[in-house]
Length: 154
Image (cartoon, rainbow, N blue to C red; front, side, top):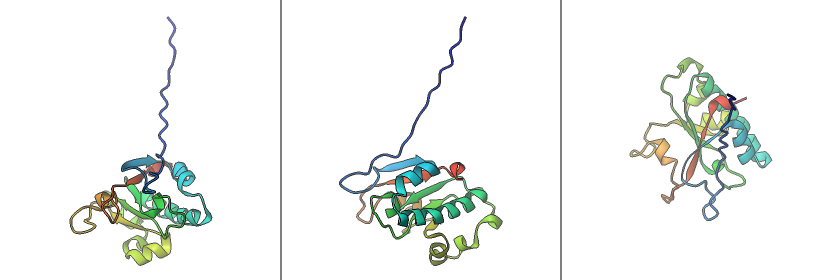
């Protein structure tokens, strides 16, 4: 009897931008750090934002963050987004390992990391959580977000 090994390889790629909105299709789309860089780092400005994002995400990963969602114009077709927006799950994180700039408000976060992060379960507008809030634009148009796999950070 001969056994033949088979391998199922699933390649998950971020979907194309919706041509009419410039957003990812609605939903939560998983990505590795490499995929995030390849997909959203197409110019020098975006690479500059990615360098801040890497420092933020690395700090949160090292503090034992288990969930990190990326939003904003950064995950759209916009060539020069001002920053990036994110939310994460602070449950079980070591507060002594969280960079103090992440606890000092938006201005400190943007200055240090070029973007901001919020607790995913906090209410963004008094009614829905950041995780839900990030999945529509200002006109309530549904849009996609990216779940970054923190285990893939360099």
